[in-house]
Length: 595
Image (cartoon, rainbow, N blue to C red; front, side, top):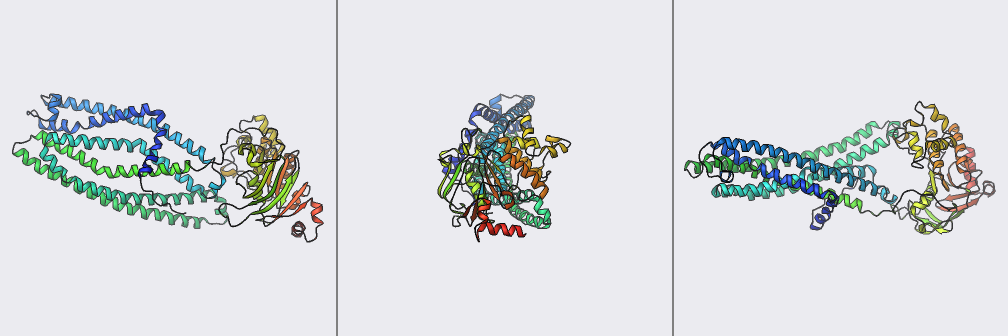
């Protein structure tokens, strides 16, 4: 998988990332109240060092800011204030966490809904160029990153800012001399935090990319687990995963080494500064310039301020990752949709007649390799028209173009005499149903999979569709009947059973145009007979486009269109095509008869 270059944070990128707060706006009252409780919690927290210093100082007379503000006379009052401060801190923290969690979960739920709604409406060209595992991993990781940011990082950023600003202000109140001594070490630590943090963030981004690679392998392996096991490729897949897992470990360990070195530097600098402050403070105490309570409070405030400054790099790194995650999400959300798909409606008065006129097409990923060239044919209302040809001739591409999964390069497709682009995608697809060769069932019940053809259909309608699809016999054979779970991708059902569930789904949709893409090619003789009987019922009275490899299944078609290398070579009925000497269809027919 091609790696994306790490995104640097620019002013434009930062402004773009702020758009994420649009999801917080509906809950701005709660968010603001949460910020108020965060502010109160942080301010209350900053009284602890002063009160503890005063408690240690005992009943000696003091002129510290704490005494001046609260007018304290003895340590009993100090102890009561500490208990009160702890109680308020607990209350403020609870309210802040609850309110931020409520706003965050609501905002994240909206982001998830918008992202998923947008994702399923993207065109097939998008999914052709993006791996499902990569998309799944990226969306999951990015939204989780934003969730962590709203829940903890923003609160920590505000808390650290208040601690640094309020703490340094209090330090100056306690002792200007000691504060200046402490601040000597700050510029060095802040510069180191900036450069270390920048380097560590690059390593973190690389780790996330490697992790995304490992997730892609897991998704692909589990989705294709039947192929993995049938080829006994468990050792191969394990080895493939081991390589990326080892890459993740190596990159993560490199990051851990640098984070460890950075933490060691901060600890050394922080405690070195504290030792310097204690040494100089003891000298001031011994000379009678400050009391024990002032010295203790000053040391504790220095620890608080130093710890907050040391955490700035980590906070900045998390904010940068959140901005990167936001950009990734907006990149996805700004991908152009194929068209707004509204609630499904019927196909109205459409008859189901359609035609291809001089259609040429190449897949966007392979623009230099034409799949269809100058393809023309017409299907009238109620006709059964078959498309045949060797593998790679372009048969399935015709179905994709009719369903408007892709746009044609040249020519025109018409439905009922109207250019297909003049109809909405919703209207076009609502009048069609596709029964493909490889049936994908969703991991619910048989009832839910059939009902997918017409969401909201009644039990009676679903059972009637199953009966017409020759599916009722095997469904009744299951102990749980329609409530039988089909398993991941329908793995609990046989190929023929999956096909009949898909046919029942199509029957329930009641389409004007039916597209059968080699719907029986992978079945044995008995299952093919059951499925073919169901298909005959489904095709009755409908316009049907049958993409076939087995010519025996399309003998009764009203018209057969023969494709070769993306070009229509022949067209006619089964009998007419067999009369063409050295014809493409006749050769295909003879080859299949011989086999």
